[in-house]
Every structure is written in structure tokens, then in C-alpha cells.
Image 1 (cartoon, rainbow, N blue to C red):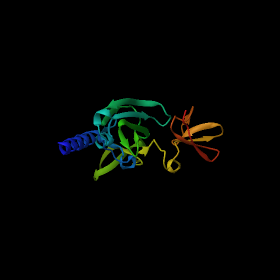
Image 2: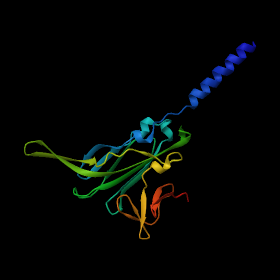
Image 3: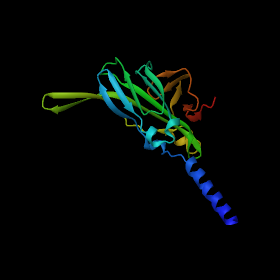
Length: 196
């Protein structure tokens, strides 16, 4: 009877451990994808939703701005991977895209998932057959995600802002009022992180 009780306890413990498991991948294995685009409409896809479990706890904060930092579209999605938006940006301009994936139930390297991907959209034109051109919105850099927990190896992360002449600029050259909380910045050639 004692052996049966021990076996039951082990099986119950393993069952609970398996149910408690969560899965995800490193942020630098995720990048954004343009699913559908037209001159005034874009649908973006974030693979992190399918790579991070439980999916019902995935929160993706999307923000799209123009070159001057004006918000074109923003939305917070729960348990969803796609984000579509309409815009009136000229085809000669770029759009800045930010997607922040968080999941407090999915633990990766000892921390809840907190992954940020930033990139830029531009209008790509290609000649499909001689004299016939086709265009679509495409990501300029193909950037991958950056783990925002950043406790280990944080100084290997690219800063998100730079202070020059008593002003703060993001990597796109836009002036910021302040560095966002949790972001790395450079001040007087030294790297810092804003915690509050």
C-alpha cells in the first residue's frame, strides 16, 4: 500500500508539472511579417503568439507611427497574432512599427516573456514582367525581437535612445520627452537603463 501511495504521488506530481509547463522561444527567433498589404492597408503578423504558450495569456501591443512619431494606429491584442490597419501615408514615406509581446504566465530563462520588436515599413516595387510593376509594404530591416527583461547580457542590447545636447532621440531620430521605462539609453557615452 505504501508503494502504491508513493507511485500515486509521483504520477500526480508529474501530471501537475506537465500541466504547468509553458513554452516559448528566444525573442531573437521572432520577427514581424507583412501578411497582406495595399497602398492604404497593411496586415501584420507576429509569430510570438503561436510560439508562446499559454496563448490565451499573450498580449501584443502594436504601435505604428510616421517618420515624425505621429501615431498612425495602435492596438492591444489578447490571444491574437494579426494586426491590420488603414493609413494615408504616401508610398515614398516609411512607417515605424513596434510590437511588444508579454505573457506573465510563460516563463523564459527565469522571467515572464517580455519581447519587443521594432522595424520600419517601406513600399517595395518590383517589375513582375517587363513593363508591369507590382508594389507592397515590406519590412526594411527584418529586425528580430529583443528580450526586455535583459538582466543577463543587458549591455549587449542596442540602446533605444540617445541623449545629445540635453535632448533625447530614439533610433529613428525622433525627439522623445523621456526614455521609456525599461529601455536602455546612452548618456555621455555611458549605457543606462531607465527603471522608473
